[in-house]
Image (cartoon, rainbow, N blue to C red):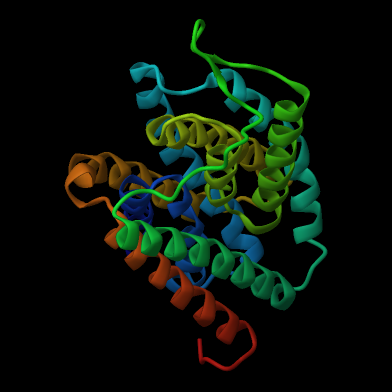
Length: 275
């Protein structure tokens, strides 16, 4: 294995570990790592990031299915909408110059990490997770243990799938930072089920985008394969220590790291930071 491939595998392992420790939103750092670590453009980094995040999320989703905590009907519905929207995002990505694409990614990263930082800070201050909305369109039927499918529920999940799929194709993000807050707001699922269901959606949408990118001839497998394998290894190893390290303090550290990455990415795109 070449030095470049080893570096790619090491960076992928970092992403896998972040996914294991912080939940399904951690994969948003894959693209900045590829841009800074391997010198790729946004368009080149996006499908590679999705490949790694998709494979790592697949491992987490399979483990969640074995535990019976994945709401697979909801995951399939959201992912189906996302897969339909991802090619539109990919089409837009190849028609936008690198500068606006990098700035848009930086804004999305700042927004996602800002939400995580605020939530973790509130949890530390209050000593418990923030209260959830009184009205939730998607609630579990206690007799069946399944979500009640109503029109407001379908509408909420459709919007979630459209946004995660569009961002997946456009920016190369799995969409966990969209899916997890949406499931927390729209459903009464517990946190473990929310993360496991989100991982299932990310796996399906990401791998669907990877297939589209491969058919379009824009997937760099020489870089993507080591990076993805490293991510899976990092996820498996990270899960071994996640229960000991995960928590609001770690979420805060992840959010601050993401904010710094967003500022560096924007500064590099604007020429304010030397490559």
